[in-house]
View 1 (tube, rainbow, N blue to C red):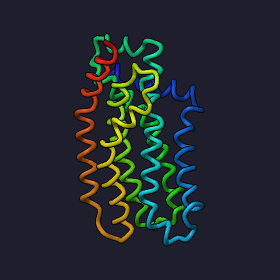
View 2 (tube, rainbow, N blue to C red):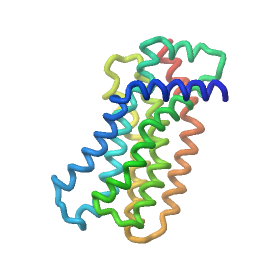
View 3 (cartoon, rainbow, N blue to C red):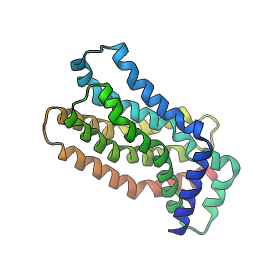
Length: 221
């Protein structure tokens, strides 16, 4: 637990020192959602239909945009190799780094989502559904993305390759999350979709740290 908190505190401090890099995914998220009323139609009925998919696709792309920073700086300054060689369990360190990444990228997306949902005329009954799906789904995106980043961290231009690796694994999250918000718009229960997202999160929390550890050892060898 001490090593977990130390790495978490260190990564949060480093992220705070590079605030301009943290703003890019958030600005991208806001710009993408804001452009749809201008490009499609300002009518509330039209925007309500596409709002869940638009917001979730924008969140997914914003998460992918910030993935490269997960291990890149540590790899370049050599600290990632020191973490891998440490006597502390590598999956614990990876889990701390993924949590720090989610706190500075995923959590702000959740906080911004009600504002953008209002912009897209999403009904009030669907607002909480959107927040719950983002709260369950964005950690899954970070955990799965960590595996792809670990496999390509040694490559100079691995951003496109990361997208190709993780995008197929993101699709179930996108489908069930957007469907939950669509169902909530109609006033129907969404407990089934939330259970599925919770199952995906549990599976990712269980397997992703170990898969990422193996991928990092391969990249560093």
